[in-house]
Image 1: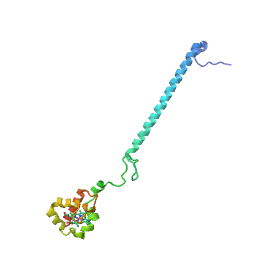
Image 2: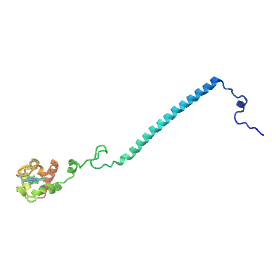
Image 3: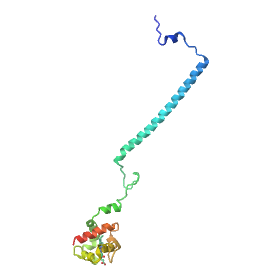
Image 4: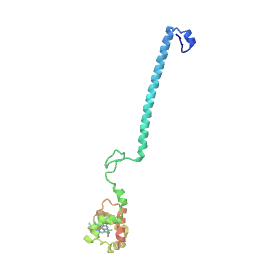
Length: 171
Ligand code: HEC
């Protein structure tokens, strides 16, 4: 039967006889290695979790630019979705004609309560008399039987002016 030796032949010939302090040293080394590995493992774990957190944030960041979907009144989107379109925003989009039809026509189309009759030239007369600024001012404050802002409480001054201009242009 053949005997085969695998490994370092010289070592096999002079097998080290471990002395007690060598054994202790080796054990110490092993302990050091183990603790080093532990530290390494721990830091790897930490690094992994940090990486995971970063990765998670990165994903959130990546999907952010597409925007949030929030229900009306829901404030999970940060600033809070407006419960209703703010008066100023919707107001700036309204034309004089729109406002006239919605708020002013009730009286002015038929000249109710002796209001300047729409399309009759009476509004132009008043504008000539008091100036556009003058009739704008009385529209804002209210005049005679006409309530302040002609009942359009969320109308800006600019919108009222545009509405009066619309009424004058129609004459
Ligand atoms: C409730 C009825 C009523 C509504 C609604 C109303 N008005 Fe009038 N408006 C009047 C009456 C009445 C007068 C005349 C008041 C007077 O001279 O004593 C008048 C006068 C005016 C005048 C002339 C003011 C002046 O100094 O002579 C303007 C401008 C005017 N209205 C604009 C508007 C506009 C713009 C709206 C809509 C945003 C509006 N009104 C809505 C009744 C109304």
